[in-house]
Image (cartoon, rainbow, N blue to C red; front, side, top):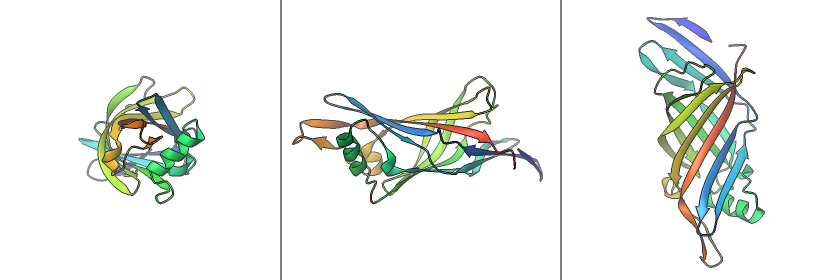
Length: 187
């Protein structure tokens, strides 16, 4: 954390995104439910700027995920999901954190708040408010979690169907992210 001496004090939090971070997309078909998961394997650092009297904003908030790294448990479903999100044409899913509605305390108890973020999927960028929670574990890892319902149509995508349309995927999806963050010891 850094303090800056401008008109009002500014605190910068630098968080290194850890490999156990993940993104989970859950949905339903007219037959059963499914869950597709991708693990994070990048080297991103988030920088949150906090100053008195204003909501905290990210001056660096981009996390990138490999769109073709999703696993849905069955290869056929994974292939359909990757084709649906156009993973070959748009190999990166980006989450760009913009701001939080309030400054987290970074305590042991879970804190809930709204976060604003841009999400880029299949070449489409949209801004959303997402329900977030943050919690610090005894090992010092900070978990930032978020959950939001989306529709394939939010990103100009069409839900897949199989076997001549007999198995249909519902348009609603629940997307959850869990970022494991470590405070950068070398700000």
